[in-house]
Amino acid sequence: MKGYYEGCPYCRLMRSLAYTGVGMGIGSGTAYLLGASQQNIYMSGIVVSAIIVFGMLDKKKKNKRSR
Image (cartoon, rainbow, N blue to C red):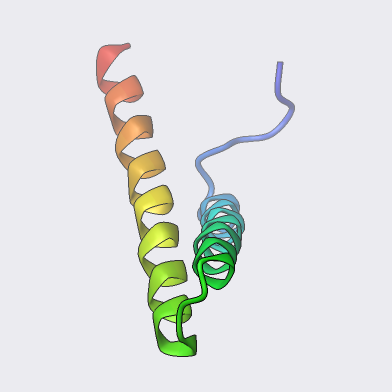
């Protein structure tokens, strides 16, 4: 049981920033290991972080609709 409200704007902002950081690390790290240029490393990080953030956002909305 959680002792705080998950839907507050500050909590959602901090959660999305955390997912963005994780996605940026995964995408950039993978591109770096594959030997991509610096521009492609940044683009890969941005794309992967967007996929993670919007994927989690969509997943949360589906769970709320099913309840």
